Amino acid sequence: MGVCFRDERLLDMALCHRSHTAETGAASNERLEFLGDAVLGLVVSRWLYRRLDGRPEGDLARAKSVVVSEESLAQIARQIAVDRYLLLGRGEDRSGGRGKNALLADALEALIGACFLDSGLDAAGRFVERAFAQEIDNVIAGRHRQDYKTLLQELCQKRFRAFPKYRVNDRRGPDHDRVFSIDVVVAGRPYGPAEGKSKKQAEQRVARIAYSELAGGEGLAGGDEGGGSTTAESPAAD
View (cartoon, rainbow, N blue to C red):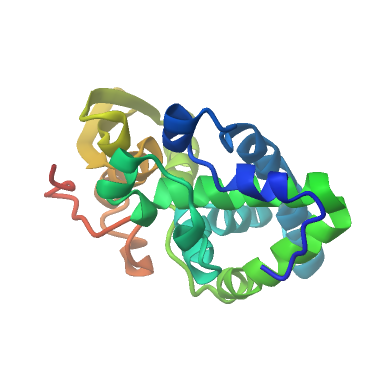
């Protein structure tokens, strides 16, 4: 990470998933995740504002949505070995929790929150800028995965003057291995459903389905929408 914590308890807390809390009583990382999400948003927004000088607000918002997406966070978490040090409950660990994008993204946000509390905004900002430098460069150069939720929302506002509405149709499985089934309603018409290991993943997948139909396949060259491959005709299997 390149960060030296003065209070190592914050580091331990940032890596503690709620499944470990349930077994040990240790404080989970959820409060730090909440804080880190805000710090990350501020630092990335400031960085993009400087790097994309003169670009309109819409461009900045789209770039930010990619940089702070679950897929980007999970990828960076793996690069700095967060998966190796996560504190998980036995069941979560056995079910592959160390490989789950949602857990890794949350832990990275918690680490950012812990860094902020331990050393202040400047130190947290330097950590974010080091860790996210390549992702920022990819976004600015257009070498990134498409954010289909943002693309669908922009298309809906332009064409229908309305927002897409996401609906959870089903959720099944234990907390450590939950599967969500979600559809999206655009101008009164439902699209999907699609499935994912998190709501964010399922929403991205069903947004891709709707966007590809409404836009006639436009925008599909950007690669997978994050968290595993799927197609419009065949949402992720259970």
